[in-house]
Image 1 (cartoon, one colour):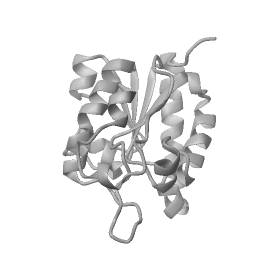
Image 2 (cartoon, helix red, strand yellow):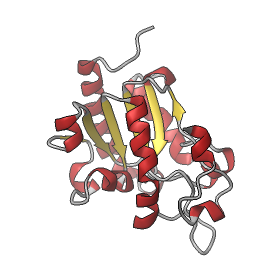
Image 3 (cartoon, one colour):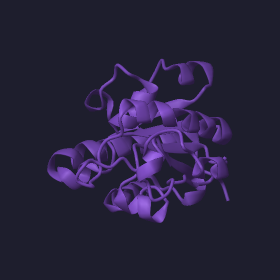
Image 4 (cartoon, one colour):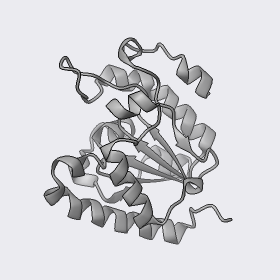
Length: 193
């Protein structure tokens, strides 16, 4: 799958990317984290969550007591969306739709028991009607994945929100991590050594 993904020409982002940002982590993990889209540093290095948001993600992993063996990390959109000024921008609806099949393949391949949705863009893939501000820090019930496939879905704000407004988002993010930690501890989602 990674080889096919590296050669993807599914949307216009193929023309502006440095490279496809490939997932990282354990392909047999019980926990899958789904972010939004790569930023500049991720585009340069080719790995998700290596920039400033990555530092917050790594801190979250410590709070959750997870190692790289315990999770699989990917993005909704695999290539960096760039605005006219050369900065990051949210992916468009068509870019999300173009990339969505990759995420579906990843979910089938990894077969996680718990999917952690990080941010509004990732949430759009799972629910068009929910807003991130209404469900961040909570488990989603009643989704077709939870009903038909027996997976659990949990929603967090994307760690990048802490870069822009730490005073407001840090308590909300922390509370979400506490709720997620409880689910992880109760569900035995860690890979035993």
